[in-house]
Length: 116
Length: 113
Image 1 (cartoon, each protein chain N blue to C red):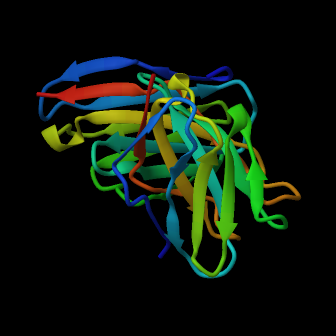
Image 2 (image 1 turned 180 degrees about the vertical axis):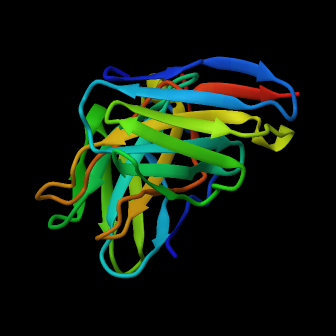
């Protein structure tokens, strides 16, 4: 997980409260992603960023927003947390596609969020 | 829309035996294909990828994967399993020209001593 850190690693919160998860990278990579992992669903993309202030929605973006004001930081916000957002959240980074076109994702260690 | 299917929730194999973890995909064109592994309480780690060329791709820790275009499959294999290979394995696909990966639901590999 070198070069990418997530915080907090664990959080318990109550329904209706806002929550922000932070992803920080030291690799100067262009692309950053937020996934959630749930049993029976694997990893599903929430939002991703392809540059500072450039973001786009993923498969399960409802209830989530993101911001990227600096290359190194990608924030995921749950405006009003619900129990269905209890999950493990993973940030990932990758560089430009390059000649091969097949950039590899590097994942953070994950943030476990419990919404009561 | 692209999709990835891992038909087995769990694969059990004895140490020293060969293992196969299955993956099929549905995507237009020729995709990039990936395998990742997740150990308990850790993030995913890259194992190997298929871009083009030789259908047999070799990766980390002695793993390899075989790309079969006609069957749209990308099965993960290892000739001799180790107990330490026990983990959750994810297949993923990225269509050419896209920036995002689509993952399968994962297959738990359990290698018994």
